[in-house]
Image (cartoon, rainbow over all chains, first blue to last red; front, top):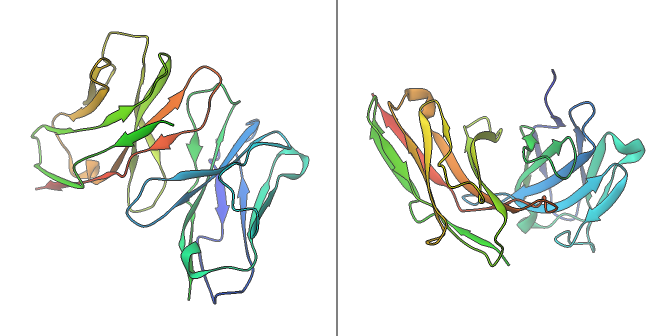
Length: 114
Length: 115
């Protein structure tokens, strides 16, 4: 069974530029999560999707961040414009549903904003 | 809001020895899950072990076991017979149950295994 796939693995951009991250969850998983992990810290939830609906986006900085999950499968997280403080690892995870205790994580995208 | 605290930024252990990683949490809920995740340099978070708060028996998974003290809000991870492959960052995490699915992570403990 294929795991959670994320791309790119690494991204370096200049501040004020846009950037997008892509996630393909495990087949059949209805719940998808985006986390941000700052250096030396644990991940923090940005947004959670149940199928196509964003049901928990309270931690998403909506002035510059946006996300979508078309057709309830793949998801894209976008930052526009990026700031120096956005440098972090962006992790995608999926679970069968929101009750399932286990979340399966992808390898993440390491973003560096210069 | 729930918080998770890991007071040991770094730990080291000799191969084949036992090490214990500490975690405390704060919550007003009575029903919740606790987890230990492992994050190797590849960055992929891997679930090591979970504990349901309503269960008094401590969870075990092969060489990994927990000491869950609900009244003290403490949840430590014991790794027995440590192996070189155990070297990684370990995160303690909390989530409400049954309906909550947001994971709240601690700051992590970097475990080094010395040959």
